[in-house]
Length: 515
Image (cartoon, rainbow, N blue to C red; front, side):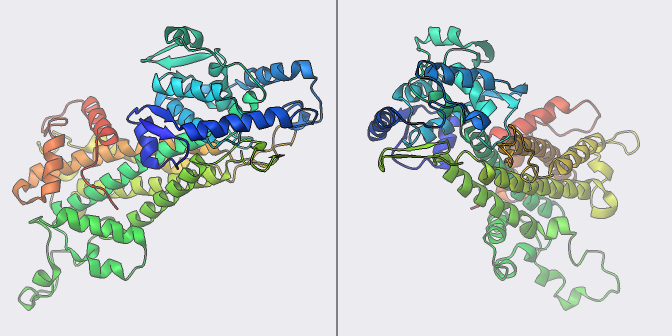
């Protein structure tokens, strides 16, 4: 189990809960604070006008709600804002959202009854995922629409995803003897006011972006092997004079991968040797194309961008992000905008741009392998069959090119795309959930591109017949993937095998890790 409460929840803890489906345990001391926070709110709110308890919401906050209607007000809020549309989020994203919301409540500043926390714990541990739609949130009063669909499930309404199917919530609750939430004071507002959808999705994006970076570094090392590149472009001496952590982390990882390769060349043995210089035009390129030579400079900023995004989103995960903030320690209630998603939105846009650039680098490396006029080592399209009769990787390149083009178009930032709404009460918004979902699509696309890239590298290895000269890490990956996508000569439809390679890249533990 992963204990939630007193200590900071890390990205690794989050991955254990969401990706590996570890169960949640609730810290007792933290739960005591949650109960004290609720009791404070119950006493403090008597005979006071407090937003969202005895007032309307948003631009209707000027309207007082009578005592007999204050609980129904919370149900009205949840039901009225359950207005999402578009695709259902995959169960993993719904689980991520629940973990993020639970961790925010466990900070004990939301004034919620412990019942809502225990209900979220039960849903996570039984893997009951609310049906939440992609479209709806503008990311200002938090992810109002997405979180309203969570609230709808918590009160026993709506639908859930469970064991691959969609069911009425109450049917699954009854199966596990789970009691729906009864509103006590402000649980409706506390549930839907927050950044937990964009944060949960964003953290999954970071986990997957790290995988993409690891694969991109490994594939870049392998392509340098295939073309027998010189070793100085990823050397310690060249990179250390550029003072960026990411660049040097990528260079170090490439050196670790290629340390036992028998294909990488030492420049001093070839181009610095006087015996090899008696010619006017050199067949070998003195320097490789940028997509091979500038790997550390291209992937380094992506490493740094992922690290920054992780720092910001882990902070958000462990923050109080609803409104108002119920402060039982200082005996007050503070109204503000902690639900605003700008921190997450900006990081997701930066991450999206970075991963698009990663996919562009891989597409250029792919093009280098497929264009015999560039590499001067391989047949056109790494065609292992009869030229003109067979087609090799030609068809798959179209898919890679079009997918990278889609990434480029989607890289326009959501962060600067605020549209006022809510009677201009929400006059500047973050669009954070949109940003996170678009980043997820760019990441998913990039796995498709990298799958094509990897298969091309394996085909090139087979053409050159250099297996016994590869670095041990490269050979290990070759041996792992060839049973999934065997060497091919004859033409046939390969899309099902390609989907298996993509699945392997998305879900397997990496062979290397850039640190």
